[in-house]
Length: 428
Image 1 (cartoon, one colour):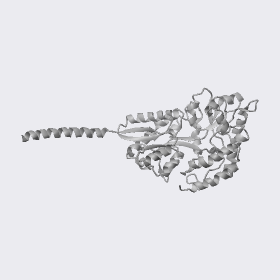
Image 2 (cartoon, one colour):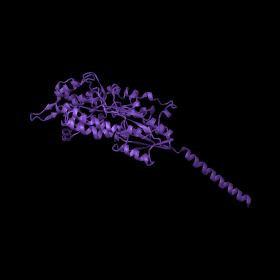
Image 3 (cartoon, helix red, strand yellow):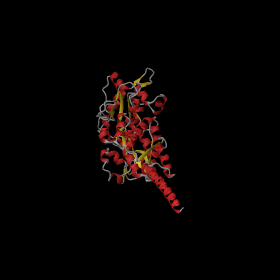
Image 4 (cartoon, one colour):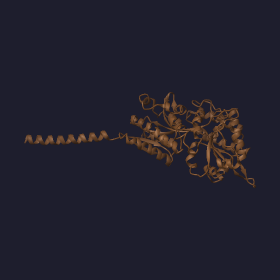
């Protein structure tokens, strides 16, 4: 009896041991899940999914879960998740969104991983973007792309019809104005049938004239928009609408009932200033076009605003080692090549940006390689957690009055400057 009970016990123990071993084995191969929050168009989503799928095949120990989050309200949504203890491990960030995340002290210094990682070097990226994502010596995001507001798209068909030489990268503001004047077309009723130029990137006319918005981009304390260089640059921008009539007012543009890309492709607009992200849409139209670098001012000064994006690791992540590997994949060569080939974004990796999939790619725009030079002249938005609010509540209302001819640039900045000063000093 005793020996029978002992045998039964041994069998049960053996079965339990086998089951425990199987569970342990399953746990050993169960991948660690890394959640990644990001925004993007359907095309961008596909690129990101493809980049991760290829990487996942050789990294079964990590399972990346992509969580698409709408661009509108992105920062507040992520911060709410962090506060609620339901944050992802990795977040995509835009160069201005980044300021808000960095100010909340929720990001990991990625140098702690880079110093021991022989597969990764931050020197492979444009230094300007690395600098933007570095705070007090801490690298808080790895760049995916950069996006200088340096593209003046021009409709070759319109230029050819008018016998107008194409713009070159060494042109000036005066050259751009002259071309816009010659290419603006007015009907017999006095209404403008084709505009010579359009541009939303007003900051280029400040930076590109030697002006600034604040005293120090990385540590802004005071407004600088009321300097003469900034005033003159903004006045030139306003004059394109109100004096020279080569550019539509915001109201006139909205009344046309079509997008800028449709106006441009349809012959209603000869040139427009924007970023390279316009490319995929323009490739859907059947016409000839290219880009030139935003021009220098009369003194040879050349600067532009810029965008760009990257990925950050949150301090709240419980899987930081695995999340770092995911960030490397998300900013790796494969994904950046796909962005480049589709024209969606200028890769942040210099080798990709200088290679056959970007600068040497024959697809339109043929001159996109000029953006590798343009990166050297970018000026980022002021690094202040209130800057987006300042732009929306203080700067934009005055710009609207300026562009609609209700104020001069001097009058607009006289009202902006003290409000900017006050908000920069605010700790709330």
